[in-house]
Length: 484
Image 1 (tube, rainbow, N blue to C red):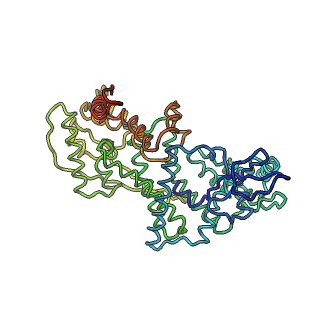
Image 2: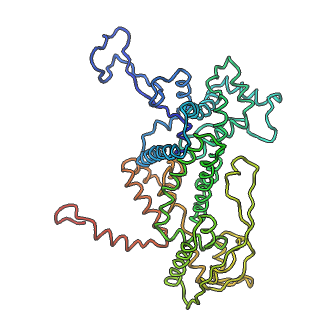
Image 3: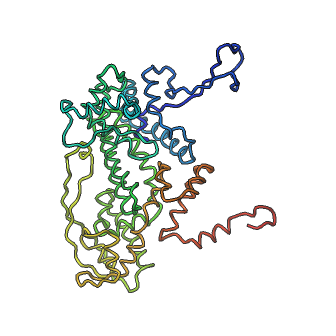
């Protein structure tokens, strides 16, 4: 939302009361409509009464039924966070010398209305759709034969990632789009990009392509684990920061990327409040402590403190036999590679190839000091096999395995439901109809608290009975002498 807001001038509907012909001329202040009045809904650009005819036409075209839905507490919270951090991003980048000019801002705000508006126009108008199909099928159009894309993707207001598909399909079908807009009989000139808008659309597509990977992870049918979510958030942080500091990107693109980065970091900082997230990463055999040094830039003191935390938690709660201390902390030799096949790849973090594994005993220090290894299965399967191994090539480490499984199996919803931007279609796809109904009748703070408690119920650090006991001590009677 924070990124898109720089490229998407929001439209809104406004009801206008018009008197029927022959009715008395109104001289008093407007009142509620009467039976002699017509009530007409007019599409307006938000905060821009001077919008021209082309603006109003695009506003009408990009409007989706979902845009009329009553905002929930979560929606209101998301908008407030987006607007606040958007202003902070503009101010911070202006201080750094990155200023969005008035002309650039005006062009940027019309990029996505032109993309989404044209897609809706093509889908809703049979003559335009027929003409577009004919252009697509004409070999003279010059479309790439490597793509099977034949339709412009429409914006879906309730689904993550639809904005990327809108931009991507318009880019792929650009020759056909240009030919369609050039047909003056169709009157689609308002949807043509100028030179700057074409550049901005490409840059926005790059940002949304980077967001596409975590978006697919969060929308997958298999609930993502925290060990999958956190690395994606780190990679996203790296990429957005790289774009915001890239001097060859447009100023509005850099500010938009920085606004997205601020939103991410606002919620990502909450991870420091719970040790489970860090322990889960350390108990991934291909990450361990080195991951925090390489990915997060931690210094020796921070890594040492984390090691002490991991050892203490293991010793107190999972170790069934004495542990022999080993203060060493080995590094890891690795080689880095990165693909450059797509524009978005230049901003991605290089991948790392790891050393082969060595066998470790059931000792937390031995595990931490061993070189990193890439599991041939999932992390969960890796540790499950070591609970009680019947394979002579795998050494059983039941204490370490129980420790790792307790934390690595934490669902990603522990993080995902606390942040923001959980669309209704995805958030309640698991049958949470009652919660969806409740969300419409409670504040954003109450909704976040409810979802957080529901998420924590599956976490290894959450004790339901202790929580119930604490609530019983704090809840006040409904009335004097009444039951709690």
